[in-house]
Structures are given as C-alpha cells and as structure tokens.
Image 1 (cartoon, rainbow, N blue to C red):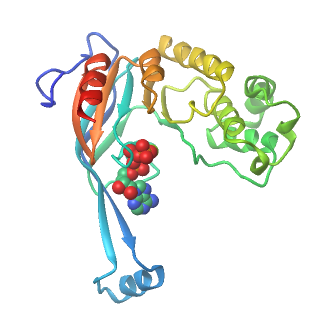
Image 2: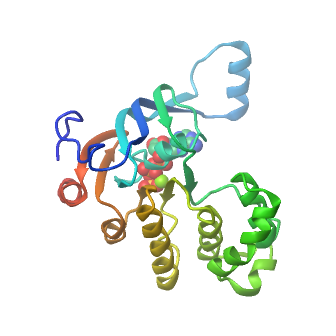
Image 3: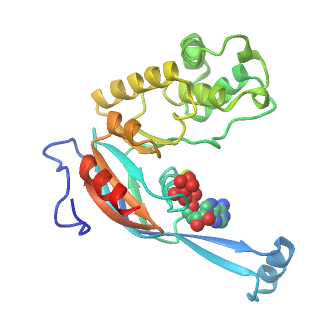
Length: 256
Ligand SMILES: Nc1ncnc2c1ncn2[C@@H]1O[C@H](COP(=O)(O)OP(=O)(O)OP(=O)(O)O)[C@@H](O)[C@H]1O
Ligand SMILES: [Mg+2]
C-alpha cells in the first residue's frame, strides 16, 4: 500500500477484467450561502461577496476500478465519501477533472430517490422504471422484489411510514433486481437487521461472481472485510491510501 497512486496499484487488468471506472484528478466543490436570498441576489447581480463559502469536498482524487473489483471507501465523517459516490452516479457535477464509467453506476444511498407519499409497491414500479426497465419486465420481477424486501403488509403503506431498515430493504431489492454491473452502496446496509444483511451480502457476492463491480462506503470494518478486497482511504477530500483492504484498514485505524 502506498500514497503514490502510480507506484503500487492493487489490481491490474490482467488479474481483473477491463477498467470500468476512471476517476481522474477530480475536484468537487459545494457552494454554501449564509442566507439563501442573498445568494440568489448576488448570483443575479454577478456580485459575490461575504456570505458565500466554497467547500472543497473532494480534491484531486484519482483512481481506476476494474471489472470484478470490490472497493471499500473509508474515512472520517465529512471526508468526502458520499460526495464522490454521488458524482460517480452523475448526481453531482465535478468542478474539475473527469469521471468515466463503462456502465451506469447504481447508487444505493440513504437519501435515494424514492417518493415518501406513495406506497412501497408504487415505489418499486417507479424505481424500476428509473432503472430503465419496461413495464413487462417490472411485472415479471415484482413478486421477487417484494419477496426479497420482505416487509409484509407494509408494502402497501406509504414510504414515509417506513423505518430506516424497511426503506433500506426496499431500496436494495429495487437496486439489485437486475444484477447491476457497477453497484455503489453508501452506508445503506448497516441499518438492516442481521437476516437482511446476510441476504443482501449474498446478493452482492453473486453480483461480484458475475463480473459486477462494487464500491462501498461503511464505517463498519467487518462489513467491509466481508465484501471488499481493496480499500481507499479518504480524508478531507484527499485520497491518503489505496491498496489491499487489510493494509488500508490497518493504516486507517492507526491514523484516526
Ligand atoms: N449539500 C451540501 N452542501 C454543502 N456542503 C456539503 C453538502 N454535502 C456535503 N457537504 C460537505 O462536503 C464535505 C464532504 O461531505 P460528505 O457528505 O461527502 O462526507 P462523508 O465522507 O460522506 O461523511 P459521513 O461519513 O459523515 O457520511 C463535508 O465538509 C460536508 O460538510
Ligand atoms: Mg456520507
């Protein structure tokens, strides 16, 4: 393991499949206004002054991910993990650098795009449409999605009445209903109970066995060790380490 990105890449295309994801010198900034109205006013007049803060959430991050790899992303609260996953998913623009992906990455995050006012059942349909499934494909898969989520009668209740674990079950069932090529999970498994975690880890292993690629953020080192082989340590938006998971976890736990 090393902090020099060129020196010791953990996996090469010969060991894995082809490169599926390239993050090249990526910077991501957030603009925060002390007061929203003033922010709009200053933006309209072109004047930028006090009250505007730019947060450099990710700074010059570079890494490549190969088909079949499972990468753990770790780091303190606020280190930029969710930001980088959101940018890879195309939900956030980058301020600098480029992100290339061979397949559309699917992000399972805590605040994923489901509708709180409609039932779990409707959300399955909406979520599957958003993943590009046809109505016929959804009809075919509906039962197995409901079965995997396994939340009983609650499937007919509005999502806003769900506990966080129930929401995670539904989200995971939808996101993995068609085996994704690139799956990204942002702390979404840890809210599930033991049985659900085992079931979802099984599904992730299955995906990895079929040349899927995983990027996973978690503060639970055991969960990361079960699923990932490579680790990336991010701190204050900078990649401090990238290498075999055990080594990166050792450095991370020493360094924090
Ligand atoms: N919507 C936002 N607007 C402004 N700043 C944000 C926004 N989201 C995150 N940030 C800032 O960007 C930085 C990185 O945040 P991010 O959510 O990516 O951290 P994280 O590594 O996922 O942390 P955690 O472990 O707490 O989930 C932090 O300084 C945070 O305050
Ligand atoms: Mg986060």
